[in-house]
View 1 (tube, rainbow, N blue to C red):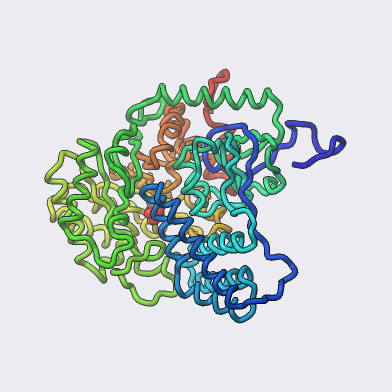
View 2 (cartoon, rainbow, N blue to C red):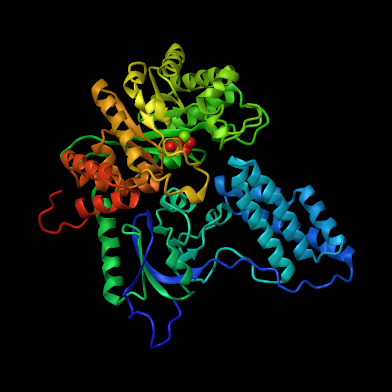
Length: 571
Ligand code: PEP
Ligand code: MG
């Protein structure tokens, strides 16, 4: 905040409130995202339209080259995101439209801006997955315009020192390039706990506060103390506050180090702690302290291909994962195509509402061989290894679907079949579903989307998509009770499982395993170890009774066992 000597609150007393997105604390100077370039009010006249057209096309191609260069030094998903951006920036149709506008008399920056915006509108109108790509096109537009106006490139700052990254929101292309050695915490004005930024911050283990409108006034260099647990940002913190946060961070690290191995509550109830995996090196993932894999998203094998992988190729990939995890549990989810995960060879026809369309397990109705071949490959891989293999289907809606899936899995000699509970109808009938399958796992990302009738890809709806919504937790309770009744395990493998404050609540609702990104597990393990099962149940009651997600967090935080023992801790 820019303040004169006579105005504004005294140092350390101004606290901005946001939403907790990733736990942890840090204090460091602010470095803001580079601003978006703005077209000057005065539009210059064009002397040489041909040269202007050429400049417009060259700017787009230089933006693509920039993405390529960054992709070249990254691996895995990060490189893929940048490759996709480069392809989009190199789209010949985009270059043609921008070039033609410039040759028609518009200055190159204006022409690129308008061409990108026309495309963005088309994507936004298409909705779903394509609408998400609109943010990428805005990124391309801003970079090309910055080049043409000779302004600094928008995007991540590089102050060369440890800093707190402050942004409006982070685009996917920015998040994959974050330098976690320098970025101590992330604060965004927009977004909610399920936004892209929040998910990424949790995956990286970087404290984060999102949805913090006051952060818009923070200036580069202002020191802030970020408390990712309370969702607060203290401006110009006094040295005592900074010391307090540093102490908490150190204590937390040593507490995490003291708690390892299988997850459990304070009084010994087991809560399996598992990993969510996609592509990436399974051997590296297996080194994390976990009891195995709670969600192997097999889509990584299918995305971006014209034809599905063969049974042999699939078998080899599954075998690598199973071998890496030795005798531990590996839960393989069958293909979750459609809606936000479109595949070229799974053509479900024109759908006005793809999230309510043929997606997840429903695609097996149109393409049965995709599912049977995948199960054959999983079974072949399982026979070659010692892993404890479980197979589960995404987006199951009815007990009949669950029964059919279980029969298929067991028919291939795989002993454990389960289903994801992502549809409210399936949650309500969990008891009947559990008559047919060995386990269920709650996909809280989709469960929240369908319970709250809020598209999970829309940032402005993130409050509705918050797993702390009482309606979502009520459904978790229904499923938890069904699990207890049938003596079957009930997992959570959506983002909710990565939240250490929510973990005891979920266990109090009857959840028996949590599956999350590797960086989230130490905090979750420690949170469970501090609470007895009875305390978890009382926290669950508090969360269910709250009128909104923030009220629920506050009530649970106030009653939870603190990290650092402070006198009697009775929930
Ligand atoms: C979920 O919906 O919570 C889930 C884990 O599945 P995905 O995010 O892959 O749809
Ligand atoms: Mg899902």
